[in-house]
Length: 187
Image (cartoon, rainbow, N blue to C red):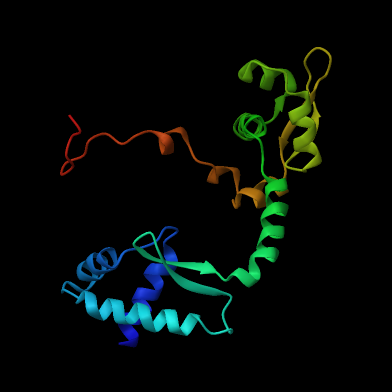
């Protein structure tokens, strides 16, 4: 039963929404190529709920929305609230993301090049990205007026969890796949 319980625990843990017994059952049936009785899954869930009700754990399995989900216990709401507030300060605005994308893909790039692509002034956004150390000044252009050239920084790589600019998604990563053999058309 521990084997089943571990699989159920993993399935509940990996879902951001409540997962229903029937969804767990369908997943396990495909994995094991055999039907797993809903009663056994329910029993495993109840054992897990009992396990996580202990004060040894900061989370618990809650029955909500017709399914089960891991949630943190109310005693930890204050610390989580502080962390979420701190993380929200680190988020980038849409204009900052757009500007940063242009710099990442077109670097080295001048402010006027960025403004030409975006169609709006980006003085403030570039200043904020420099303050957050996501971009850096790479030098000066040889063009008239010798404008500053911008590029991404090492902190940019860390922020987005990449090791090299080659790891950035390409336009084909965003394109919708054509209808492939074996897939139904939506027509």
